[in-house]
Length: 272
Length: 278
Image 1 (spheres, helix red, strand yellow):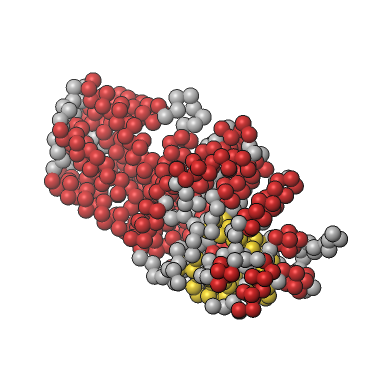
Image 2 (cartoon, each protein chain N blue to C red):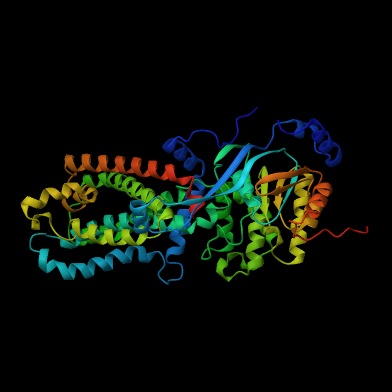
């Protein structure tokens, strides 16, 4: 007898199985990402342009507010600020979207089988596409401020993939929790605000007292921020310890999130 | 194999299913499948509540057994109807086959692609156009864009949305959405089609069209499972009927016999088929 396409008695191999299923359902991922991009600004006049305008306008506002405070120690402050904002927005939007997508799909998951992690993967994929669009205004700001355009910029895809892996890990873990506890989303929103201020997005690291500066190394977002910002702002490759930190955080979080998600995903239907 | 040889012979003779199809490998096989819903006695939906209760006292659950040790084999070409009172476990059975629910105990195996007809609106996005939703829905059933490109004309033809196909779905009526959902699920020709009452939406003309379409699929050798309270439809459409009661299979076999036995019990509150004159 042929081996079945589905056998409920087979033991679950957490990550490998899910990854294989995602490859099989890759067209679903494409369709979900397309949908997210199409519907985000569907009813607005400017449409996708908002993806580029949004961080740009935030940057203008924050530049006006903060350039007096930090402008003296940070030349080309808009570039410093915008690079930080972009990577932060990518992370926060992808993770929040992971949670919301899974909740959106609850009526679907009760009726039809699709790999449950598709929604988190699509959320991060959407974030990456939006990020690529937002790199256009960043490039313009870099040109305007005469920032160095060096070959180090070729490191950006690696920095983005690492940040994407981390966001996916966090998204998977949180969306698995959110199925069981509805207040996870609200709690996470508050955590995000605190987390943003603890990450040197719009202030220089130097304003932190030297004796507390080491605390930054406990913040994984610091590594992703630095690996992303160094090629853009300094025109240099990120420091090796930052790359090592980012790789470690990305792999650990992805494994942890994937493990937690897979362990709980068979129970989702009972709770959604 | 749980099916008796006589039943196979019966299937072959009565429903002209190709002998090879019946003798061959099953499409779905459930062995001692048990599903338990574990409901917390007090509703705990927030993390804070959970932590507090966990600290104080263990959370108490009450168990609901939706399916108890169900054995069932479905062969290619069968049209299986499932009847039973509300809460008997009919929908749970479909969910196990659609691999949505992993059974608490027992083994469920499926050979081939299973497509449920989606409930009104599930899996559709109101902001996307009808056409875009067809592709999204198709992808959820596991079909690539290029495969959907080949099917789209048949889907459009069947759903009869007309010029509105490129308008956002939020402007559609419920009937239009139902037609779209039915068209996508049936035109992608899965190995096993699961139909949970959704057939009964839309106007009578469309219902009739759906039934005709299912019959055509049936003649081509498609397999499907229908859950419905409309016993007349079940009796007309199905080659085999299963009566489920309190999570157990009460009876399995010839449609008329099973439906008669079911309607003679007190638990039946469904529409009784009207004997037809012609």
